[in-house]
Amino acid sequence: MNIMMFAHDGSLNRGCEAIVRSSTDIIKEKIGGAKVYLASGRPETDKFITNLDGIVNGANLNITKYSYEWFVSSLKVKILHDESYALGKIHHNIIKHIKDMDVCLSIGGDNYCYGEQPGLYEIDRRIKSKGKKLVLWGCSIGEEDISERKLEDLKLFDLILARETLTYRILKSKGLSNVKLCADPAFTMKKEELELPKGWKKGETIGLNFSPLVWNKNKKSLVALGDLIKHILNTTNMTIALTPHVIDEGNNDYEILYRYYKEFRNTGRVIILPDHLSAKQYKGYIARMRFFIGARTHATIAAYSNCIPTMVLGYSVKSKGIAMDIFGYEKLVLSIEEISDNKKLKNSFDEMVKEEDEIRQILKKSLPIVQKMSYKAVDYLNEIVM
Image (tube, rainbow, N blue to C red; front, side, top):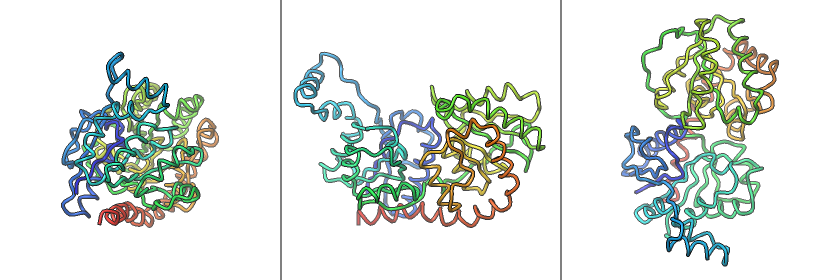
């Protein structure tokens, strides 16, 4: 069976890398003879993912102005209000591989949380027109994200795998009968442990991840998080390891975390992890932390999956849903508005420290169940191709 993952824009987002790595592993583990290929918008960033059977260039193509394609596209759009020809040309690097595949997995996770996706809709339509199986793999979609056009696209899928209960309930409430509940595949990703950096305090290091994406949604959060760092330094003996997880230009965690490093490095208790590690290597460090505070979903998944008490900054439907599936409610998940509230941040951190043992016990009990749900995705996949 040939499987192509698409809707992936490269692995400088280590969460996207984690999805590709872990999905490939669990698919190959449970489906004998499966070959997994990745269509990547930036294939040069994925070359170190060695468990794939191939990586193809899935980058968008430009339509040259005044070319034949440009004239045809313009006429179809302006006169017929038809984008399909233009979108087919733009996404040709993905579309041309559909004929060689048995199943196509749209793996973006939260791609459907960011407005209309006409390019994806066109790819999906082409996949179905060629009689191939189409799967939305491990998605999160909020109530506010669903439009009539998006709903029509979702109806095309042979299988939609919601990675948490909130999304599952929302999609079912829209009348979709092709939805199954699973868990994010990254819960199963293996870790790689590198040598601990200078300044790391064994058993007494807390990880902190923050992102430009969250900061841009609440500008006051930058100062509030700095106050939280001061609170941690003043009330504990722990070292803080600033932990980037997305290192993409214009959306680089390392750049925003380095501000805190410069401000607090003279304390001798604030260090920063490098900006070039793989998802497995970041997970290897997170696994040896005592606590974790994170804005990036897959950084928090790395913590949860190693039973590390975790506080989530700036929730989305995915982080709310994941916490609910682990704890039964939104445990230590702060909204975009709340992360600029100094008192709320400090109280949530103090709550995490106070309830450390209880949280660890819940995580130890929940983790095998969640990981089983990750593997359940492959069972559902297998059912539609049998």
